[in-house]
Length: 169
Image (tube, rainbow, N blue to C red; front, side, top):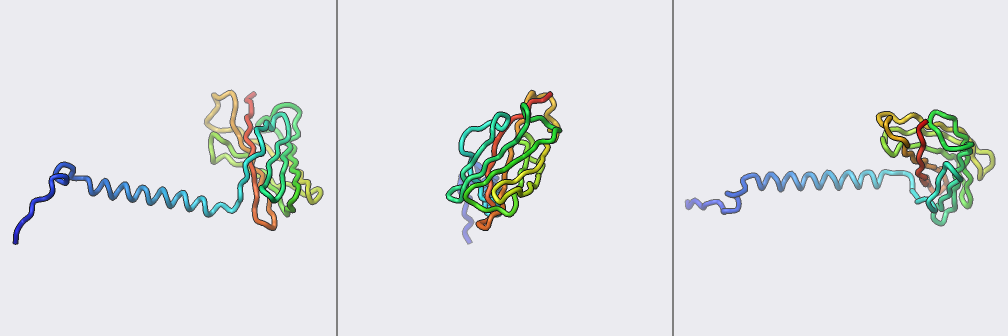
């Protein structure tokens, strides 16, 4: 039996096979993560219609061909944390059995506050919400938040989001 020498490229990089294997495993895990979260989100998201500041005015979003939603936060002045916020959502072109508004910290994704709204009419929902104080960012002058509006419709769950900032007092 004749012994063959190892090729020179393996002699220079002894850990090459292990690095290739680790890279392949890393890519497989990243691909699984992206596909899992993309396929398991039960809300169809639609971008907001335009740049809008909830501190100043109501914000609207088109829900594709299904219709439109408008979020009103009726405050006198800027939105503040730890203050009850009157919320209203108007929908057009789609029927919804339930509407919820989530306030999600854009700084810390685990700060989520969900509020279910009551139907006043089939296309108008009202309720109250409140922003919590963001932990771990006490030095910032403003706190970035996102309001996510989610509708339960016969076509599935539809939603949009609106970004806004809260000034610290």
